[in-house]
Structures are given as structure tokens and as C-alpha cells.
Length: 245
Length: 245
Image (cartoon, rainbow over the protein chains, first blue to last red):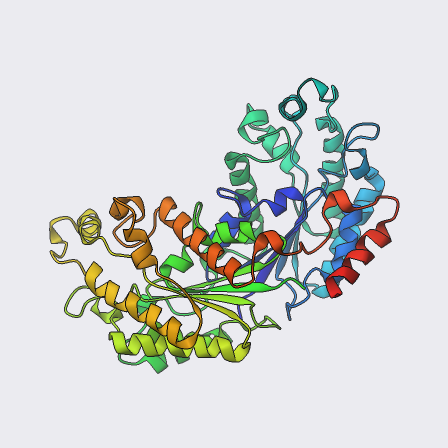
């Protein structure tokens, strides 16, 4: 049986199967080894995400072997600005992510859980994006700031340490590269192709560290070159036996 | 519960989650509506594919709502040339595809089954590709011809009519466009980004005709703008009720 991993998060997860995006790239990295199941919900914060947990994976008879939990970009929207309906206080955010981790660990204690922090915010990029949509009517103050999003990112890292699960500090990692504002972010928040490559690279690195190294995992059936056309039964039978061992 | 569709085929299916490829594009078209499960096996012919059927979807508690069956490019490899081990006689090919269709229809009689013909072959493209790999040692005669692959494609269409299932005549469709050899094929057989766009467009068209129109299907949870932050329980409860109706 081919295992599956779940990508649970907001728009950055929902969009991850567009060309050059990290979800599709991950599915390609794990081709014939792991199914990648996308559960991304644009605009969602961690509070709303809690309502999805019980029905998120109905139809899958086994729990996933890994999950990425990638919320926070919306929780960190500022009170008193245009996206305040999405705001979740940082203490509650941390507790919500804790509940999400607990839910997945209850499904399977051996599940590889990876908390991903929100990416950094380029406030100027957000403002340019708002002006491109609304012209002079655009709000003057960005609905998110990099500093506040950083506070949320810090909670992810602390929580991952507390719970002994993996984390990816995307907020810090991206800012290590000069010009990250335009290089990795398309509108000050969502990811460019290069930004997606960072997420893909980090997820593959952490999955590999956690025991899901695509280069070491068996493919689900024999490679075509291993098939003996004169002895098909054995070609497929041997493989099933090997897999069962 | 979110339904799933299965893409069952050879390398053109296996590679379909690379950037700009048709599987990832399909997953993006059906985001939050349908899970796309890839079961592509590079180099496989329809004879070898039969050995996978019984274990192909272990772990999924329900049958898929749709399947694409996309074999034939390897079956049509010519006897007496370099890929002859993959060759399957055309009468057997048709019977193998019939068995595959029957298998899926037995899982669920309402399943939307789509047989996709192999793409056309650009023999000169195949030879260029062989020379790029083996230089002067490359074989002089293409291991596939467009004419023979066309005979296999014809069987797909006939079979689909016999069985009353959908089909996509990729072999014919691509050849309607001038310069299809380089426009749609990267090595005389596999697909360019534009070739992938043709497959994506055709699959979406046929899925829509068969009742899986992404623009008409409900998303699996409310859109974030429909969530009432002051009445979360109701926002999510109402939606579940609607979905059950």
C-alpha cells in the first residue's frame, strides 16, 4: 500500500499545485512512493482550521505518514486593518496549532509532523498589490507587518520544540537571502516560483531527516527494466514478497 | 468526503506532476473538490498493467469517481527494434484495456471511465533523441512509428464505443495542429508544456461532459468569505448539512 502525506494549511497550501508550486513539486519528488494529499484552505486561520479536523481525511482508511501544518499568515493579520476578521491572537494561535498537532498524533503517534511558520511579509509588496487592485482607494497601511508575523513564527518554533515535532522556520530562512522581498514573494505574502522552491527544498530536507527520504524509499511496483517479459508472474510476485518483508 | 480520480497509465502519467504537466494542472483545476491520485508507471504496457489492478488503490475506502486509462505508447513499440520487450500485439492490447475498464466498472458501475489514446509519434524526434543519448551508436530506425501507434489509437476509440465509455483521441487531436511534432512532443513521444496543456484541456472537457465540472462542484468547506467569525459553529454546521443534502 502506498503511504500518503497531507499538506494542511491556508492559501499557500491550497495553491501549491499551480505550475512551479511546492505541492506539485513534492508529488513529483515522491512519485510512485507517496501520495500527496492537499488540504489547503485560502484565507483560513488556525481557529477556523480546527473545525475541519474531524472530517478532513474521511475516505482514507489509514492515517498519513506525515503532515505539514502551515497556518499563521492569516492569524497574523492586524486588528483595526482590512483583514482583521482573520486575526487570531498569538496565544490562541499557538494553542490552536497545538490542538492540530495533537489531533494528528492521536491518529498515529509515529506520524511525522512538520510545523511550517508563515513566510515573511513585504509590507511594500502588500501595499503595491492593494494599489494594483483598488488604486487610490487602497488602504494606506499594510494589513500585515513582517514584525508581527515574526512573533507568530516564533511561536511555531517554540511549540515544535515543546512537542518534539519538526519545524521549518520559513520566516527566518527566506530573510537570509538578499532581496527576499521580491525574489520569494509575488505580492508581499504569497510565493514566487523561487519562493516555492525554498518551501519544496525545506520540506524534502525535513521529511528526509524524519525518515521519508524519497531516494531511499521503494517504488510501489517494479521498474520496467526489472520486469522479465518471459516470467511476468514472478516479476510481480517477487516484488510483493519483498515489500511484505 | 472529497471524491478522488485516478490517473492510470505509463510514463506520460507518471511524469504528470512535473512543472507544467497535466496531472498537476488537473489537481489545480479541481482544488478543494477532487483529489487526484497518480498511478503512472514509466515503460509499462497494458499487459504489465493488469498485474497492478488488484493492489492499485489499497488504502482508499471508496472507489474513485473517475479514472483515466492511458496506455499504448509502449504496447506499440515495434518488434525487431530496440524496445521490442515492451511490445504487445494490438488485439491483445485492446483486450487488456477492456479488462482494465471492466475492473474499474466492477469497483463502481457509475465511475466515469476515460480511455486516452497514445499521443502521435514523431519518428524524426525519436531518432534525434536516440542520437543525443548514444551518438553514432544510436539505432537507425525509430523503435516506434506514427502509423503503427495510430492503429493502437484506433482500437481505443473502437473499444470505448463498444463499452459506452468516454475516450480522448490524442493521436488525432494533436495532429490537427501544424507543427505538432515539435510543438507538442519533446522527444518525439513525451509531451512538451503545450502538449500537456492539450491533455489537461481534453481531460477537463471530458470530465465536465461526464458530470465532473469543477466550476459546478462544491468546495469541501466554506469559502473564507462565507465564514461568520461571530458564529463559527453555524458557518461550518450549515455547510455540512448542505453537503449531506
